[in-house]
Amino acid sequence: MGKDIYITVYGAEQICASCVGAPGSRDTYEWLQAAIGRKYIDENIAYEYVDIDHPPDVEKHKEFANRILEEELFYPLVLVNDEIVAEGIPKLKTIYKELEKNGAVLQS
Image (cartoon, rainbow, N blue to C red):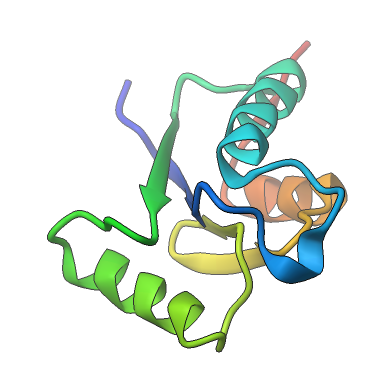
């Protein structure tokens, strides 16, 4: 089965200034994988973490990393199929809603 839903988390090793007390970006990425995997069948969901300080040589990743570094967006930044669904401290309810809109199937 191919991957139909792509979740991308942009972040950095350093916790953002406005996110004091919040988990780091990598921790948020791992937490999202675990939370989504408990609620949805995730065979068709692909996950990607992008370090904004060292983005891969992919134009969209470089653009989002630059927007975060320019403080136009906050990190961690969560996208579902290239749509922004969360900035800073993500809320699962919002992410779940977007996943369902994109065809995620609940665990039985």
